[in-house]
Length: 370
Image (cartoon, rainbow, N blue to C red; front, side, top):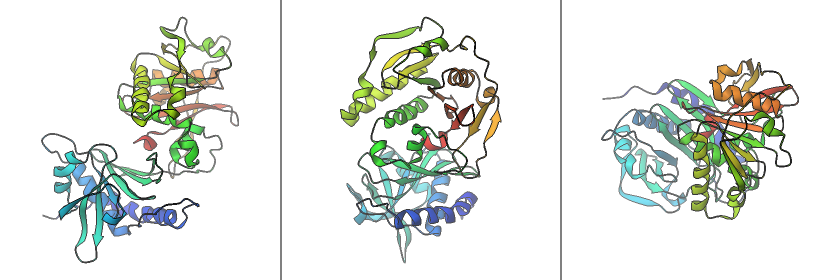
């Protein structure tokens, strides 16, 4: 039986084709092979199959699949099937357990006569490769591979049911993006992505993944004034501060991942994790209070880096409750600090003081962390 077409796939495919065509035409002086650009029909078909596969179950499990559009000759560390498979939701669901680990992609290519087919799986894929990931039932993420050895992917669009969010890496009217957000958007240099800011990116991803919600406060190393906004004593203060995060750039990837996950796990404890600008862990379980002599935070400016996103002034409680309210208060009182908040419902917000507008700016970034 012919299944119903996924309407969002058809709507977004021309825009995605234009994006990947621009990337392929302007590699910005970077070296290395550039992936082939899929046409709009191919993009639509791959997204359509991935969406319907996301709603299926295989022995009770939700499929987690990554599909990359490339030929076998473009792939590194390729596993090639003797007989190609159709790009079909049922087939994708059955094969999903074999490729659900991070960094493994099903390779999809188009034959002029036979049409789309799955030729196997690969770990290494070229720069600007079109990648479609099944993140959750009805939740599809389109990504762009940077080609860097760090394996960085940049989110291009997120489709959730009939909702389409296309990431806008350089929206006008938002002059004060924090460095963490620029790294997530992918318009900083590859060198800075592999540097210290990436520690916060990895912490953000890990905070979100543990699913309990949590708060992280990044405070200046040169002053203790942030303590004016913390209820004394901090329940789990560290002495001396834990400094392994500052040395992660020299660590093996596996050790880096373990350390990041261990630190991010501290945010699951009630209260906030406090981290210095030098990436020293100062303590966790911190309770935020209003700084003496400072006013109660009444509004924050909220934005999301997607096309059509509109900034709005809202009360911080509208963002998600106590964690968000206390983080907004902390940043209003400690204007050289940054607060990261993960919600149990997977939302993620970066709070930073905007000196241009003299208001707390709340950046909603869960679209970039999927």
